[in-house]
Length: 149
Image (cartoon, rainbow, N blue to C red; front, side, top):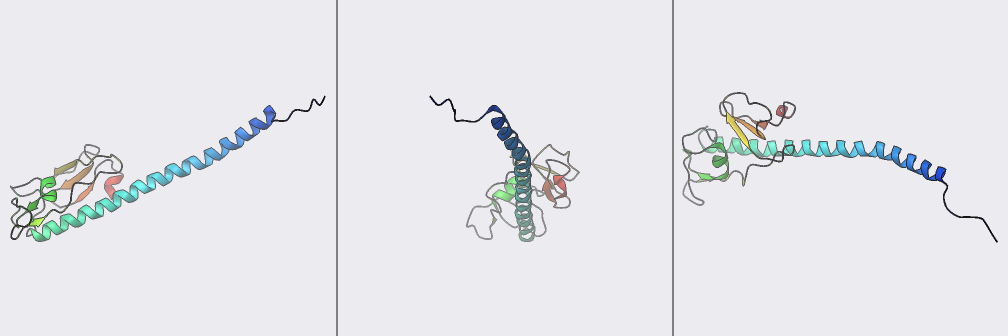
C-alpha cells in the first residue's frame, strides 16, 4: 500500500498567504489613490462646466450674476428660463435665455449638490458648493483643500 499523500503542507499554505498579503498591501493603496484622483478630476470638470454657464448667464443678463437679482435664487436662475432682467420666463418665449444647467451637479466628494450663496467667505463643509455673489466665484465648499479649485 502506498502511503504517499498529495496536497500542500501547512508551511506551503502559510507562504502563499504571506505572499498574497504582501501583494494586497502593495495593490490596494494604488486603487484608492486612483479613486481619489478620479474624484478630483470629476470635481474640476464640473467646476469648469458650472463656471462656464455662470459666465454665459452674466453675458446674457447684462453683467448680472445668477441669483443676485430680485427675481430668482442662484439654483433657480441656473436651472430655469429667464429674461435679460433676470425675471422668470418660459421655454421658447421671445428674448428668453436659459436653462444653463439641468440641475446643479453633485460634488464628487460629498455626493450632494447644495449651494451656499453669500457675499462673504463660507464655512467649509457646510455645503457641496459655494457661490460668491460679489465676485461670481463658484467653487467646491466641502473642504479648504478643494476650495482651491
